[in-house]
Structures are given as structure tokens and as C-alpha cells.
Length: 288
Image 1 (cartoon, rainbow, N blue to C red):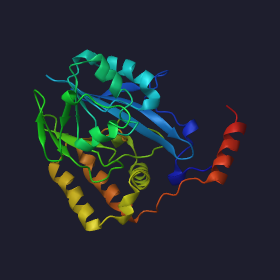
Image 2: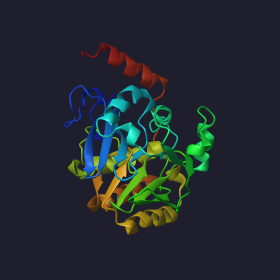
Image 3: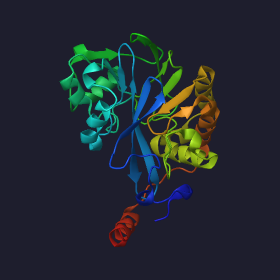
């Protein structure tokens, strides 16, 4: 099966900076912010980065907790950058399985951790893993929380796939944490989004937006433009998306331009049963 947007088969794609033998590895996005990242292959389409972030400070914060399928690998990767016992907060951007894989383990192991989420997030999690409410901090878009040496301002990203989604702006680092928004399907995943070509970035972002937030095709483009302007006026020094390598602030307009193009892009239609059978046939007969 050919890959859309000129992407290579995910089976043949490798992250040029990945450390051999590690599913999840870490690197610095800023002096006090570590990225825990892995690349999830989507056969026929490319790779989607899955990121969590550790913010080191007086009250260390973990932003998301990795994917459920990689939960065994996530904890050793986390311990390589911080003792989980030192964490004081988890900011859960939303309740998808690629964001909350190690959440329950962390809450169980460290009774000092409090979870930042919203009312809907608590409600969704109560259907399968109820949270101890005395350890929850509820926050809504526009509200602020002080976490020792920095203030975090919650915001609703302009694109999302889960109604509990809440990103934030960190006033100390001037970094925007955007959750799934600005993610991209890529053929190779560098440590810095600036190392992507404009074409790879734009095509990957637009394609991801049509997959992850198909409602954008029905969105009022004027309202979307106003939402994008909110981020433009923030002038972040960096954008940290759950599904894109760290993007320096001078790339913000590129990110916004790609998202603005999503409503008029070709809607995503996934493979049907015939395509799946053809894919399985090729996977079975391809040499290792």
C-alpha cells in the first residue's frame, strides 16, 4: 500500500536520533523540560510521535503519562529523568489511551501526586478507573494554577479529538502545551520540528488534523481563525504538542497556517476491509 503525502512505509522508517533498543527515550526541550517520546507506526501512513513532558521545578509536573500499550516502557523512561516520587502534579491533557497509560500506577506509587484535569475528565475516568477526588484539581479553560515557581494557564486548543482536552501556557518558560493540536503524521521524526521540511510539516499536520479532528471540515473558518489568533498573540517561545517534535516559537505561524488549511483539505477516509486484507497480504509476504 502506498503512503499518502509521500510518506514512507512505517516499517522502514526509523527515528534518526532514537537510542537503539529503547521504545521510549528522552531529550531536553528546554533547560527544565524533558520530552519522553516514542513513535507509533500507523501501517500505510507513517509515524505519529507520542510525547509526555516532565517540567522540573519546585513542584515537578508530568504532562500526560504515555500510552497504554507502552506502559511497561514508560516508567523506566520516566525514572531516567526524574524520580517519580518527586512528582507533585500530573497534568492530564485528556482521557485518551495514548495519554493516560501509566496514570493509575503513578497515583498508586506516589500518594503526594495530584491530578490536574477537568470535570469531564473525571467523569470519563470514573467509568473504568475512578479517581480519588481528594487528589484531583479541577481546572477550566482560562483559569490559572500556581505550581511553586510558575503559573500555568489552562486553555482549550483550537483542534482536539476529546471534549475533555485542556492544554496550558507556562508563564515561566513561555511554552505552550497544546495536547493533540498541531500533531503530524511523519515518515521520520526528528527531535526538533525545525528539522522537518515545510512540505513534510504542512502535509503531516493537515493530514493529522483531518484524522484527529474531522469536525474541522464543518467548522466556521472565521471562528477558527479567531481561535488561532489567540495562540498567535501568546507569542510562545515553543509549542509542545503531544504528537509533534518540539517546535520553536518562530515556527508558530507555520503551525497555525497548516491548521487553518485543514477545513478545506480532503476528508480522511480510512482503509476498508479489502484494503486491510491487501495490507495483511503484503505484510505476510514482505521479507523481514
